[in-house]
Image 1 (tube, rainbow, N blue to C red):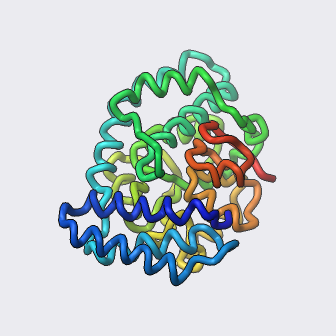
Image 2 (cartoon, rainbow, N blue to C red):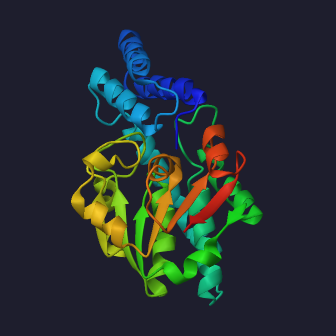
Image 3 (cartoon, rainbow, N blue to C red):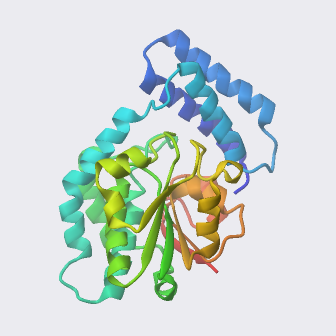
Length: 291
């Protein structure tokens, strides 16, 4: 995905947010914002890949703040909230229906709704306090873009690129039904903290590594996957996958610049430029397959 003019001020809003999460020192917050502006001025070029700007901007802010994980408390809250409501979500997905195809569709829907609970998207209010009510509302509405039927014959060797903390617990329901249908799963998480994305620490904390066949990392704290920093093992896994499942907008921004196929993007459209690029309006629940 290429940069959009709106990305510039959205990224600065994220820098501001993570600075305020990290410190109440106004001078340091100002320095972080000035650092973001400096990177924006030096790197921004129309038509550049979006993540080639977002990754350096966040890294600069983290460096100035001297904080490698300003979202740590947010991630903990997200995980606790998802864990609290996971039994209810599970009851929606595994509702006594023995039809694996229908269960897979419901699990994908639940995972996409989980992607809604994101921090740092400008203008998005994360409804943690009404998680249950919001989930039920979106579950009833269903997927707006639904290519799940086209994924069913491609589940033998899945590479699943995870996104945020909290929602990763909902993703485990997708893992469960894929395993039940005979598929293998390689889970991919960030190599180090960036925003509220899941890392190996959270995977180990919640025992998610025991729900998949193996866990790899992206090799760094880049937004999405920065392939020049990615381990060879990950590149080989992507090359050999029967299906790549890419969760969330950051993974979409980077994977859509590559030629990996087949790839399914599971995401909630939370910003206009991503919606315009993937072809779905703001607010849509998307499970789109590119073959």
